[in-house]
Length: 438
Figure 1 (cartoon, rainbow, N blue to C red):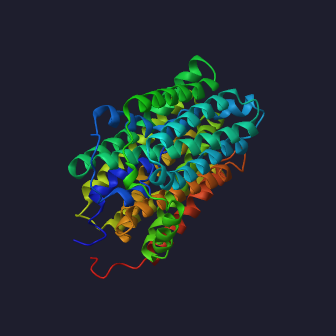
Figure 2: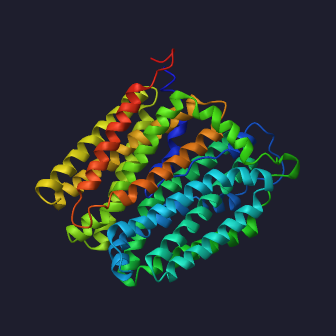
Figure 3: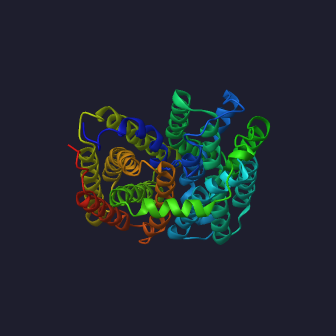
């Protein structure tokens, strides 16, 4: 079995959160806290069901804060007198905040402990969500979304560190898989709930819902989550420690190559997230509920493709699986481009193109993330932190660019998909294989 094949079985569930849009995003990635806590004796408070349930809920921040809101894009633009690109910039500011929150939150919690930073982050998330609900202009919405993302990323990474502190061995693996599994459900539920909200009331209620969830998370964390990192295990290195490890990881050519593939795959995903509402609702007349059903179907396609990739681990060369996913992505991009140029993106072209596009990402992102982590076995936490950071940065950059053509064309989105796919294929083909790889 090749080295490129081996790690995928265990890595796919953990990286699936980061791959959903609704992910991860997401999840989000495990941060540098993993490196400082893995291999350390974990003692003290046990990982109870209440603690794990709280962490599972916190892990849904990223998909719910994006997907609950996506069906409302056209109405947000109308109410705040903003164009499609401006509305998509509210995604960008959230993604930038999420990236910074994940990158910085881990080292800070290593130095200050877990409980207090987690509570402060959840409080910040709740307040920022309320500010989003009250925003009278698109500019204030962008600022509030940045704070919401920063606090959300900080909370997610700190909550995951609590699990790593309190569990090890099979218990840790089961716990992280449970967190990842719920992360795969959230992108399916989020747009459906968002559509129901739009059917019954206005888009601002979506942010009130996120604020209510933030308050619930804060209450649960205050009651059930203990301080899992005792003072004797804390360190003052913080960002300096992360910086030294980052320099070692970022000079690894194989890691950087797979990092490019992962980040650009995230960009493809959020080119879809940022434009699908305008294409399907604005250009093809779908209702918010029908759009959300299609969005959920695409999330199911991504999930099934991810599970298929997991079953292929050890049987098919992992790089070949990634290549197949990229080829399928490129075909979807060409279909969407042709449909946009010659037919104005009719509904059948959009539905089929989006389904193939999103399903293919289940073959690309998780596998590339697994191989990236395998390339830096001495720094798994730092590698995961960088993967999460650049994924959300890519999402933040791509989302507004995808809407540059306005609400009447899908050409920019299709061109972005094709360009990012070509760059990913180039990065993959230029990567050196390990000497013992098959």
